[in-house]
Amino acid sequence: MLWNRRRPGLAKVVYIGSTVATILAILPLYPRALDGAITTQRLVSIAPRISLAFRVDTVGFYFALLLGVLWLLCSIYSLGYIQKNETRYYCFLSLNLSFCLGVALSANMFTLFIFYELMTLFTYPLIIHEETEQARKAGLKYLVYSVSAGAVIMLGLILQYYYGGTLSFLGHGTLKLSQVGKPILLTIFSIYMLGFGVKACIMPLHGWVPDAHPAAPAPASALLSGVILKVGIFGIIRVMFDVFGIELLKTLGVALPMLIVASFSIIVGSLFALTQDELKRRLAYSSVAQVAYIVLGLFLLAPDGAIGGLLHIAHHAFMKGCLFLAAGVIIHETGKKKVSEMSGIGSRIPLTMAAFAVGALGMMGIPLTCGFITKWFLGLGTIQAHHPCFIAVLLISSLLNAVYFLPIVYVAFFKGESPEGESRLLRRETKRSMLVPVMICAGMIIILGVFVTVKGFPYSLVEVVVKAVF
Image 1 (cartoon, rainbow, N blue to C red):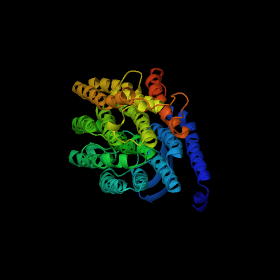
Image 2 (image 1 turned 30 degrees about the horizontal axis):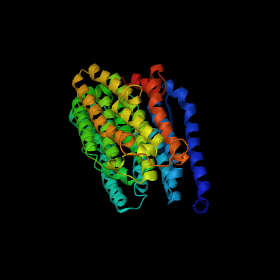
Image 3 (image 1 turned 120 degrees about the horizontal axis):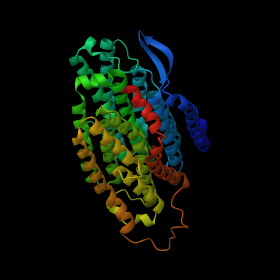
Image 4 (image 1 turned 30 degrees about the vertical axis):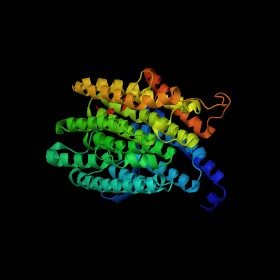
C-alpha cells in the first residue's frame, strides 16, 4: 500500500490492467456458455453438503462478463473524476469487482452468500468516499438495510439446508413440494425475496437507494445502479431457477403477488422520480422503477417475459451507466446538480448531453434503443403468461419516463443562451477519460437495440438460459 501512496499513477495502471485481465480471462468461456456447458470447482468443504465452490454456467458467465465491461468503463471514467483518496477508492473498487464476480460464479447458496455479504461491506467505503455529512448518513443507512437483509438471507439458507438437504445449484430446483410442504416453501421463498429484495431495491425495501446514489461519486453511482442492484436481482434469479424451479413456483402461486409488487415499484418509483429536482436523486428513483422491470419479466414465468427481464440486466446497466456518468460530467464541468439549474448546458457540454438524451430515449423504450427491446419482450411475456393487463404498467412507465427525462434534455438544448466566445467544435468538453466511457455507453444503447435482430450478445446467452429453465 505504501508504493500506491507514493506512486498513485502506477496504482491506476495496475488497477486498470487487472480489470482488463479479468475480462480477457472471462471471454474464452463464451463458446462453452453458448453451449450451455457447466463447469464446477469445489475449493473446500465447510460441513456436510456445504462447501465453498464455484460454477461457470450460462447465466453466471453472462453476469460476470457484464460486470467486467461496466467495471472497466467506470474505472476509466474514475481516472479523470476521482481527485482525492485515490488509493482507497481503487482498492475498494477492485475488491468489489472480485466479490461481485464471486457472486456470479458461485456454485451454491453458501458461496453466493459469503461473497454477497463481502460485497455489501466493501461497497460502504465507495458510498462515503466524498466524506460529506450526506455521504456518511447515506452510508450508515445502506449498512443498516444491507446487514439486516443479510441476516434474513442467512435464515433462508438455514431453512433451505434443513428442509432441502443441500445448498447446491442442481438445476430446476432443489426444493420439492412432496418433501417439504407448501407452507414451509412459501416461508423460504418469502424470506429470500425480502433478503435479496433490499439490494434489488424492490419497494418498499428501497429506502437506501435514493440517499446512496447522490452521495457516492458518479462512477460509483453508475456501478451501484448498473451492477450492485443487479447482484440482488442475481440472487433472486438463483432462487427462482436453482432453488425452486419454474414449475414449483407456478404451483406455489407466487407469481401474481410478485407481479403486483414489481408493478407497484415501477409506477411509484417513476412518480417519485418525477418529483425530484436533484439530478442524481431523480436517476436513483428511476433505477428503483427500472430494476423492477427485471422482476416483472422473471415472475411472468413465461419464456418471453424471462428473456425481457434477463436482457434488461444488460440494457439497464448501459442505459443507467450512461446517465449517471453523464450526470458526473455535468457536475464536474458546470457544478450544477439540480434539474432546475440546467438551462443551456447543452451548448457547454453538447456530446455529454447528447449521450444523456440517448440514455433517456432508451429508458422511454424508443425503437432502435435497447430499452425498446426490453419492453417488446416484456409485452410478449405478459400475453404469453395470460396477464395482458400488465402491458398497461409498461405503457404508463414509458409515459412517466418521458415526463421526467425529456424536460432535462429540452432545457439543456433549447432553453437559455449559449456561452459567448466558445466554439462547440474547438473547445474540449471534458477530460477524455470521462467522455469516452459516456459515449461508449450511449453507443451500446443503440448497438444492443439493433444487434438483437441477429441474435447477438446478450440475446444469444439469454436464449440459452431461458431454454434450460423452461
